[in-house]
Structures are given as structure tokens and as C-alpha cells.
Image 1 (tube, helix red, strand yellow):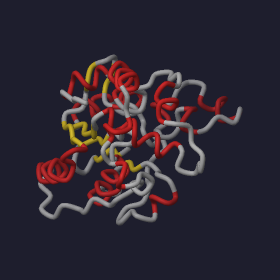
Image 2 (spheres, helix red, strand yellow):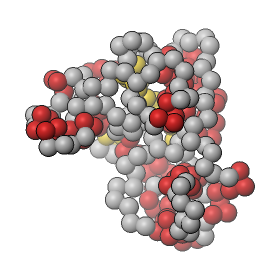
Image 3 (cartoon, one colour):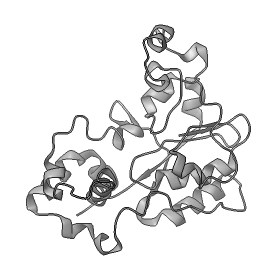
Image 4 (cartoon, helix red, strand yellow):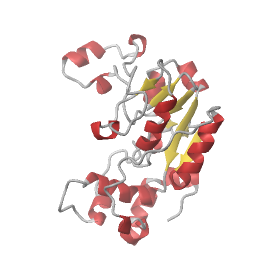
Length: 231
């Protein structure tokens, strides 16, 4: 997640939508006062330019019991004292000046949900030599399944992102967004987290049957409707 005061934008990072690649590239445009949250150590090795910085939430925006929660061993992100990776729009607006949140452009990345579910499957079991089959993975119970997708860029069911980058045309959309910031030299998008899915499995449709296809359709109905995705 990034809050760029230098360019007046907020990057709301969705999961399994090339968000890390976009975040690492955008961090090259950040100034010393901008907020850049941490990513995994392996992905940090790909970062060029500014490292994670300014991710402590100012005291005036912390919840009343934050000291108690930290004393009880709660993680800073859960205790409301630290900005974090995949922070949703509603939580972020509470943790910063709401006037700035409303004024800054919010940018995010979306992806065909059926393709994203396949990517999430390979990522989830990246270290498991004997993963469950895909149908079992899709059929699992999921509480708030859109927590790291739709809820990232919406508040109370309303999309607040002003700029939508589509995974399917990410390079072109990213270059257009960077140009809109008045930046002439567009940073290169690194390839992060893309090595866990074999090239032979890139056609996500081969992974589905009618049942799993309908599950994903119901699970991500709001995203499918909002962005016109089809199987």
C-alpha cells in the first residue's frame, strides 16, 4: 500500500493481481514523506529506490485502546498502529486525514476472478508437493471472500478507486497512469510472485468444471458486474 503525498495518489493493493509488481514500481516515484508499506523479504530484493517508510499510523488516527492491544501482543497492523500490505480503503480512511483520502486519486488493480482464483490456488500451495485438487480448493468455505479484492477498493459496497488498472492490459494501463502524474520516464514493472504457476496452466478455463465456474461467479459477483468480466 502506498500513500503518495508527492503525487497525491493512494495505491490500494489487491491480492494476486500483480499488486506487488505495481507497488514496487510506484515506490520509485515516492518522496521522503510518502507512506510505503512492507512486502515480503523476497519481494523487497526486487525493489529499486525507496524502501518501506513512514508506515506508523499517527497517534491521532489510532484507536483508543491501541496501547493495551500492543501490550497484549497484538500485531501493530491489528492494533491500528501501522499501515500494512493489502490495507482496505475503509480501514485506511480511518487511519489518515479523511480529507486527503477523499482528495487523492485512489488506484488499484483488478483481474478476471476466474483467472485470479487459479493464481491464488498455485500461490496457496506453492510449497506443498501434494496439494488438494482445484475443485476442493474452490469449494472450501471462505469468510468474506472478497476481503483482499473488492473490499480493498470499496467502502460499504461502493467502489472508491478512481483509477482501475486491469491485469489483462496492465502494462498499458500502468504507463497511462504514470503519464497522468506528469512523470516522463515510466518505471519498469518487475515480475514478482509469477514463478509459482507453470506456463502450461495459463489458460485458467481448463481448470474449471461447471460447478466450480458457478462458485466463482457467485463469490465475486460484484466484481464481475462492475468490470464486465466473463468466463
